[in-house]
Amino acid sequence: MRYTSVDDMISQTGSLSAFGPLAIILVEEPVDLEDCIEHHLNLGFQRVVLAVTDWVNVPDGPIWQLRAPVRAPDALKRVLSPLLSAARGVWIYWGYQGEYLWFPFANTRDVRDLLAFHAEERRKAMAGVVVDLYDFNGTEAIDATGYFARETIPRAPRIYGGLRRRFAPHVPLERRHINRIPLIQGSRGLSIDADGTLSDPERNTRACLWHANLTCAVLSRRTVRALKCHPEASSEVFDIQWEGSVAWSGQAQQLMDLGLMEAGQWF
Image 1 (tube, rainbow, N blue to C red):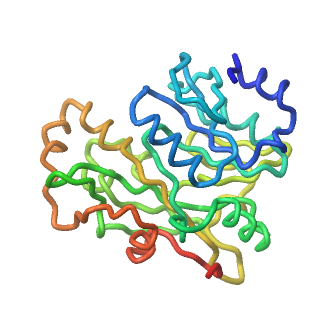
Image 2 (cartoon, rainbow, N blue to C red):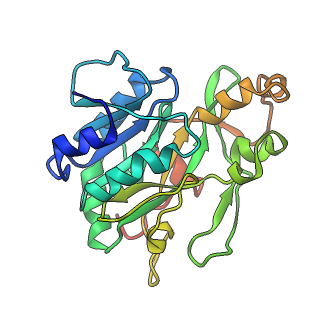
């Protein structure tokens, strides 16, 4: 299915309640796309929506394409805000191509089980961190150390680490944090700013007032791609030699062991 605009998609699908949970992928360029689609369908999302500048060739399946200004500085606000407001009660994941949602026990449990438990805890969004993927000694790797947080807003810390920390001089200050709210339950009037901040302050928090909640991680090749295109950083990025690198195992438990996401009360 192809939609010519966000308004076209909303007018034809209504509240989207019959199609959730949805995974919305902002496609900045057609790379790392097929495995990204497959990953999120395997997690249990009913539909994958590709927000694209131009139509792309994709495999058959429950995949929609939505023409949208994905390269605009305010793409998140223009693409996601109307969908979040229209999809009342529907859970939406958002990310970019070459990014992969992971959550506790993702190798053996479905995203619908995750969201059902999270909703029972009266949470309407799930906080996460973006974990950079990159090549290291011939394998795909992530940073195992070097993460830290600064909390200026209660329960909504700014988290730093990964390539954005190690190559900080080449990353704009406002883009150095790695925290993100990638799973959001839609609600009338809900919107998201260009930096990923939601209009409902409680949805921007990592946990409720009484105990720790589930958090997730988004493994991403986006940062390393951007750095390789940076004229001053590209030579450094091709030689990422750091003692904090570890091979990515493809197992959710590794991210939990490193403290990059937590199961909260979900066992």
